[in-house]
Amino acid sequence: MKYPLNYKDEFSQTLLFWIMRFIRHKLTTLSNHQVLDKESILQAINALNNDEIHSINELESLCKSVRKAGMIGINTYSTPLLKLYTFLTQGSFDTMESIDEEVLSDFLSVETSTLSNASKKNYRIALIGLFGYIDKQNEFEGKSYVYDITLKISALQGKSGQKLPAYLSQDEIERFLKAIDEAQLGEKVAARNKLIIKLIVYTGIRVSEALSLRRKDIYPHLDCYIIQIRGKGNKPRVAMIRQSHIQNLLNAWLTQRPSFAPSHDLLFCNTKGKTLTQSYIYQNVENILTQAGIRKEKNGAHMLRHSFATLLYQQKHDLVMVQEALGHADLNTSRIYTHFDSKRLREVVGVMDTLNDTKEKE
Image 1 (cartoon, helix red, strand yellow):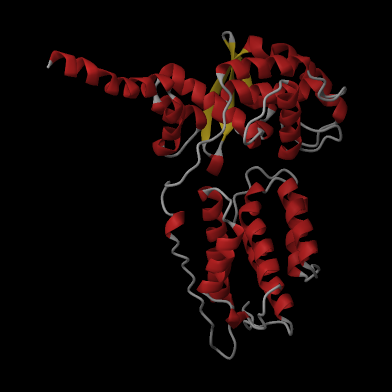
Image 2 (tube, one colour; image 1 turned 90 degrees about the horizontal axis):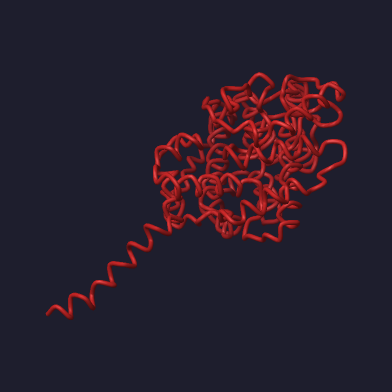
């Protein structure tokens, strides 16, 4: 069904309407392989279909509930568009035609100035997606208004300007692992929390991948456990971890898990039997880093993945191995970890050391 571009009387309500329609569209097209609470997704779609959302705050709450239900990808679109709504409604706009590429470029310049290139690209994707959707879905008296937004921003092209990720040195990893063993991390679920974090440290898997593991995805092989992972885009890969690193924690958690009557077959659940959130894991990691006296520019669970990858490359000097271990689709994504290879950097330094030797021979 198509609608007039200025479907509502007020600009703010019209903008909210189009953002809601687009969010509904994404809920029906995004990958949902990590969704466990399908009923919540269906309720959200119905709420958007039946015009039950009347404010941007209600839409934000709906998007949070969808993400909590397992559709993590909605954040790529909801976060930029919620901020776009605030940016545009605080301006002097009265019709949808008032929005053009220059206005959207101004928005990107203001809102993404401190963000990484990856985040800037996500903002651009969200804006192009929204206005591309409006291009196709608006119609009045047989005519459509076409924005044709492209947002060709040179700063968003390629990998230039990419910041090096924060990571733990080998000594800091050892201190962090010791802090895990000493941490309380919740009296009831300490074994679960420590198990999740150790899986991330020892294998480099993403937090989302750890929380998506099913009981059958981890099984013994010789002195290790094989872990079957579903990565980005539902791409499968395999990781291994020494049984000695997690055996006691795994046994304790598997004994405790049935008492929470989980409503799914995931390996991990909360005390109500529901899925765990990534923010909960991030908070636990923050607490352990603080306990270990470690402070980085970005203190988060994803830093543990960077630490694993950095240590792997420093020890093996094999980019393909790093790519396969982390599940990167592009080898160039893994290449960033070569910047942390001090041995290679010292070899570069050594080039200048030969200058004096050459001069003496002359």
